[in-house]
Amino acid sequence: MMLFLEILFYLSCFLIINSFFIYPVVLFIKNRKYSKRVGDFNYNPSVSILIAAYNEEKVIEERIKNISELNYDLSKVEVFIGSDASTDRTNEILTEQKKKYSWLNIYLSKERQGKAGILNQLYKQAKNEILVFTDSNTIFHKDALKNLIEDFSDNQIGGVCGRLILVDNEKSKSEGVEEVEYWKYETMIKKLEGQLGILLAANGGIFAIRRELFNQIPTLNAVTDDLFISLSVISQGYKFSYRNDAVAYEETGKDVKAEYKRKVRFGATNFETLLFFKKLLWSKNKFLSYAFFSHKVTRWFLPSLLLILFVTGMILSDYNDLIHKIFYLQVIIYLLALCGYLLSKIKLRIPVFSIPYFFVVSNIAIAEGFIKFIKKEHSVIWNSTER
Image (cartoon, rainbow, N blue to C red; front, top):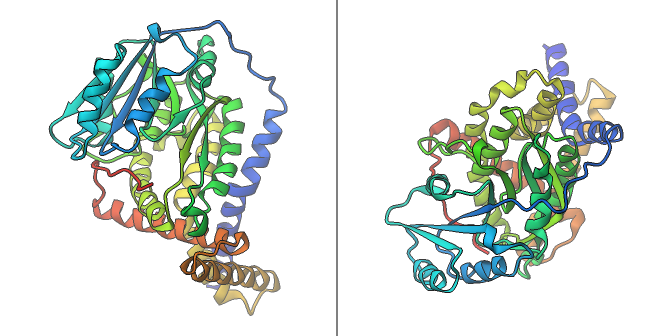
C-alpha cells in the first residue's frame, strides 16, 4: 500500500514539474535548432474580422473606432459584429456605427445563441481569405493586423496568434488578481510553441486562421471557442504560429470573484474541448502529443494532481525525508495563499501572498469547472467578464 502511495506521490510530482518547468525548457532547447520565420511584409490578403458581443455598450463603439484606425488597407477588410440578443444599448450603438463605416456589418440575433453560435453565423457571411477573431473589449495596436497577417504568406501556416497584453485596472490591483503575472508566463510558452508552429491555444483577443480551415464550433456541448479553433487548425496538419509584434490589450477582471467565474466557465468548456481532440494525444507528431499532454491535459487535471500530492505527502511524510520536505513546502504555499486571501479583504496586494492565493483560487475554479462538466451544467450561453 505504501509503495503504491509513494508511486502516486512521485508521479503527481513529476507531472506537475514537467508541465511548469521541464516542458518550457524542452521548448526553449528545441527552439534553438530552428531559424526565425521570415514573412512577406508586402503580403496583404483580404481579411474578415469577427466579433461576438453580448451587452458591450461600454466598449463596442471604442472597439469599432480602434479598427478604423488600423494600419491596414481597409478596402480589403470586412468587419462582422454579432450581438447575442444584447439587452443593453449594444444593438442601438451597432446600428448607429453601421451608418458610419461601409466595411461594418452587423448581425443582431433575437435569441441567445452563445458565442459559438454567433461566430458560426458570422463565418457564413464572411467571404475573405483570412478570418481574424477578437473581442469587444480588446484594443489593437495600429500595426497589429498587418503584423498578424504577415505569416500567412507561408502556405504551411494555418493560424497565427498575436500577443495579448493584460492590463490591471485600478480595482484589480488591490484585490489580489495576479492574472497579469501568470499571463506573462503563459505568453512565454505560447511564443515558444508558436516558433515551432504548434501553438495549442490562441489568445481569444487576437488570432487569425485561413477561412477554409474553419470548422463549425459545437453548440450542443459548450466548448472553449478559441481553443477549439486552434486545435482544429493543428489537427488538420497546419502550423499555428505566434507573432510577438501583433499586439493587443485587454483589462483583467475587476476582482478575483470575476476571474473565478471566468475560470470556472473555461474549466468546464476546456474539458469538453478535450473530448473533441483526444486523438492529439496519439498524434503521428510525437512532440505535438507531448506538448498537448504537458501544456493542456496536465493543466486541466492539475487540481486532482495537487490533491493527490498533498494527501499522499501527508500520509508518507513520516516515512520519507524528501516527501516530508515537499509536503511542508506545500503547507507553506497554502499558508501564503491563506494570507493572500486575508490581505485581499483589506485591499492589500503583496505578491509573495497574492500569487499563491491566485494560484489556489484558479485551481479551485478548474475543479468546480470539472464538476460542472461531469454534471453537464455548463452552457453555451455566456456573460462577459465584468471589467
